[in-house]
Length: 319
Length: 141
Image 1: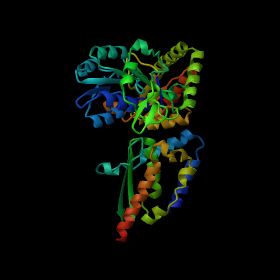
Image 2: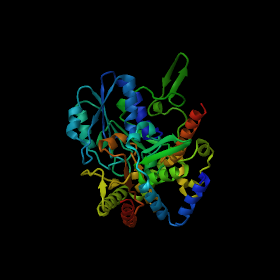
Image 3: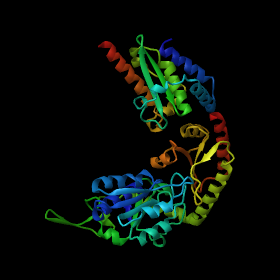
Image 4: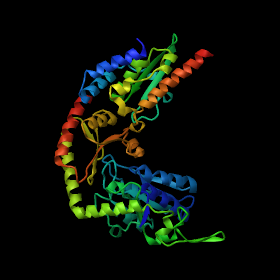
């Protein structure tokens, strides 16, 4: 486990280091249409630097990955698959076990972007057998500026360092420098120990409440919200995967998401609007953005009911 | 009416409402009433950067005064555009450049002034003033 500044840095670390060590011109990386920019741009930068090609798994109208499409993209040139566990826009839970199984059969390692998933579902990296898993502290009640890149030792050991400097070295001289063991090899400079301690505190806090209880409650609330929100005239859900949780993206008729968000804000509801750092996904659905309701264990059914009333009022104002 | 007087009119209109939702209803109404935008002007060069919604602003010089047209795909933003045009359109470049847009604060749209809000109000005002500067320079040639 390597501590980073967050998921974004984790992906950058991986793309840079894994890319430099293992990838050559003509190799292919598989991403998906529903990825967050942080799991797209580092790979694009790598592609530019190393002459690698980025291939993209399409997303269906229901907001699920086209697994047939994925199988077709997997070939002997594929060097890595990087996919999100749960979409931060659609709430879709991707079939990561299947993706990992298929990739491994083809001899291809897999990185999972777990930023959204980490505190909504059980993440057992041993069970998943993923090669890399990245997530951020701030999405699980820890401070900002801290995150994790988990990686299988066999890869990390071979990978070139990402950033150089203090802590990641063994011996430094102008005639040659040697590097420290894992994980320190990838943790240059003074670590964000305050952030990491905060992350630990967040984990303890959640464990105290009971992780499984938290997830069960959140999912139940999510299902309740979906059902209640369906009654709002003109509501359109974006992403209706068979397996989804944690976030609901929607639009109200033809209203611009910004308008909906502004009015909801005045009524006391904090929802994010816009492209949610997933512009390719917005393009795929031919929309400029969505309004996104996100559920945590401190939200209540009453709040959901209030949101529904507010949505009805907003729908009328903008209708 | 001067730009200052037009702003005072806007402030009075909005002060009739205490409830925020009523102020937004007024903005929505103003947005709906905004003169239709010439499709020929709906171009990349008229698009304002820094907005979560799309905002187009087009300016022309007529008889020493700047006529501004605007549009947005978000209705509340369109309402804000309508207010800006009401206050600034039809004035000389100097009047626009010298103007202090105090009405935005006074009617309580202050949160829309924050750049992080990304609705581009700052960008819109900047663009209009940039047009004024450009037209003034052209005039002086």
